[in-house]
Image (tube, rainbow over all chains, first blue to last red; front, top):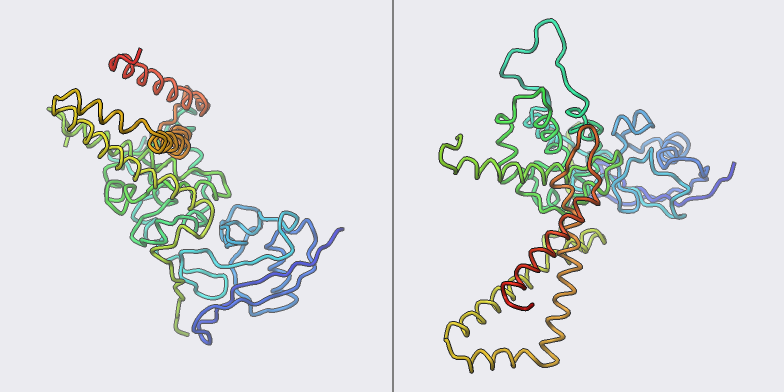
Length: 245
Length: 132
């Protein structure tokens, strides 16, 4: 098995001792088929047990190993040593406060997820004793948005969220859109506050970085633009004589 | 153990220098200056036209027919096409995806439809302006 020595610089921050983060360098003999998460696990197991970072599944499902690798927000289980130069810099996801080392504080987006009501809201009672019927074409309208693993790489890439933490942000708005266009859902009006508010879709200036970095090929930027069109359409429909309010 | 999360500072004035993706976005957004300039330019031209003096209008047209202004307008057109028209048409399928049955219509069709609409509208304007 081919190996290559990588110099891995990791941003370290110990809230009990440090006033600000600093880089610590490790030299790691990496197998070419390792993901950068394997290199972090090697550091943790063999070189420095104090290193803190999140991970769980190692297969792009749990979404917990999102970090900045050479300035790009990525899932470290999906970023391979063979694609990286000899010097690699690993930092916690941008735009989030650092809890410790590579672990970030996600309280803000967790609260925003709740506001999006990311579940099917019904006004009519659900069908009794049987499941909802949904055609495949209705499913395909929103299916890509269900692939999100909440890794928050899109928030780390979003300059709007960097500058304004009130912005609801890409993953949460894409999830709201996912339920809005689900044929089983009737809760669109209840999600209006995050859809139509200034901190909602209208705060997005369509940089598009969220979609470019998404490790699951979800397109939150598209969801946000569709919500803007939808919002504008609703606004003008209400202005028409006899328009619904 | 008490928590002491560390907030990394973000520069409000130089954030777009962080990566190439942001710089490209800013190049697109800078086209607003050209939009502003041409709005002003069009208002000035209309004001001269409204004077009703053919001499003033001819002299305005002649003032534009020198190397500096021709180069400026040509560069502005290229910049606008590259960073606004092409960019926005490329992004159009994101905002208005079309699904036919279970299949999503390929982005290319939506982009080409925009170019066709653009050419048709331009041709109508040129026809109304008696360019041809």
